[in-house]
Image 1: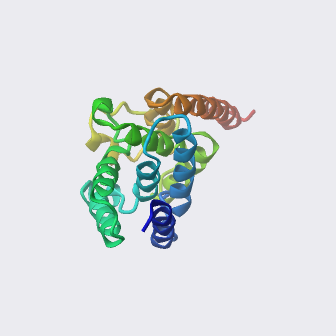
Image 2: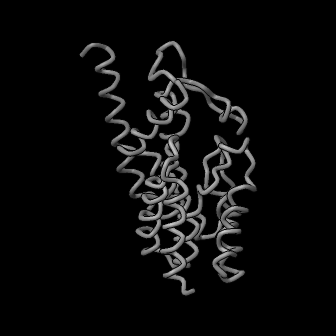
Length: 216
């Protein structure tokens, strides 16, 4: 199977697998990350097939839904690619990216990321900010029964991944605990430019939110 056919077949597999996922890591999230990764890839000297397949498979078995087990996603992705008789190096490159994508509440070790991983990570984080990122925050918060805002509950600075994952603060707090931090964590020039626009949109949104909260 050539790489183009493998990518098409993988997209169909991911769509079928994640179509009913309800926490914001559904097929359409993957689709957006895939499209954004391809946009970033145009300005980088990266392996397109690795980028596209990693973007498509990065949430095929999200570690947060498996008690923090980061081996599940690479294992499921690897099983799929091997079943398609994909090249062994391609498989190794793709599955090495998956555990490195997610924001875990603590600083990244950029030295361990390949260029392809940096591109997919940027694309995934871009989907967490801006207009769509705002929608996802409240969709996820609602799925977890979180209130929108409580002015008496202040945002936290998480020192560990465990603290970040156990946090049940109101949804607005998530802007300060994650979303507004992502602009400065982008890897690529294109990712940084896209992030700045989405970051500015969120700041404007928050200004409007607080004005309306105050009765204006």
